[in-house]
Image (cartoon, rainbow, N blue to C red; front, side, top):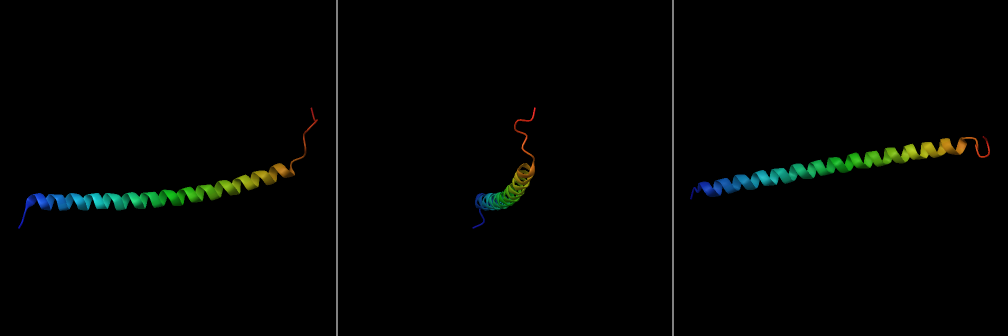
Length: 62
């Protein structure tokens, strides 16, 4: 029962499954990059808040 149409369908299914797996891997990588960026930005905001808190108050100075 060697049907070429079934063989082509099996090959297509395999390609789709591989594409799905690659997409999941790319999504996971993007999620990791996003988490890293979010943590880095949080650290930068804390650093800026610290700098701002130490700055002299310029209110009234003209």
